[in-house]
Image (tube, rainbow, N blue to C red; front, side, top):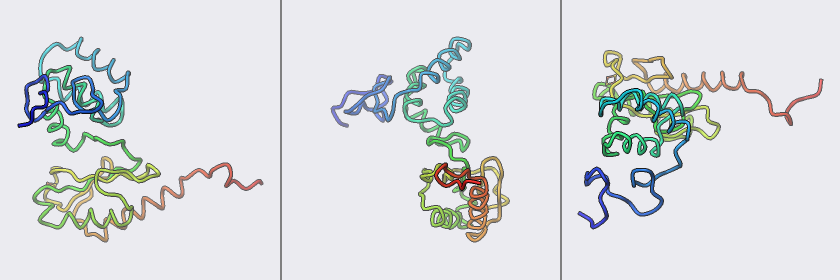
Length: 201
Ligand code: FES
């Protein structure tokens, strides 16, 4: 074990790291949005209790900000007196929590066992090739996000992916490509031209 100071929780996996530090002493990627902070505080004041408030707080923070950056996870960890590693474990376990900003079209490929053995990774690869993004990231235009997640609860249709709230199953890589091409075409139809692109009537 290193001689770095420990996180206040005493959890050795949550050592204090050098660099800019956040509210609970861990490295912070960005400042906490004040609106999220005030809503967290208001919720805690209305609902005294313990760690059972974690999931509702995560939902609240995500509903406010759209996703759960490290700084927000830190703040929730500090407020509940839980190690950050525990918060991160919960966030990464549930597919409905996002740690990156949501894209207009959010694609989540299931990597649970049933999907994995039916070549779900080929779906990820097909989408990655079309969009040029790796899992966990968003295209530069903010239109498409790609994630790999655990079981989505539709194992009978493996391999499975979700597009926002819709589940698509029994997919081949070609199906995944076709789905993305269709979304790209829809995005092009809906695109509002830049002022410099408009032709005077
Ligand atoms: S393993 Fe993919 S839906 Fe269950």
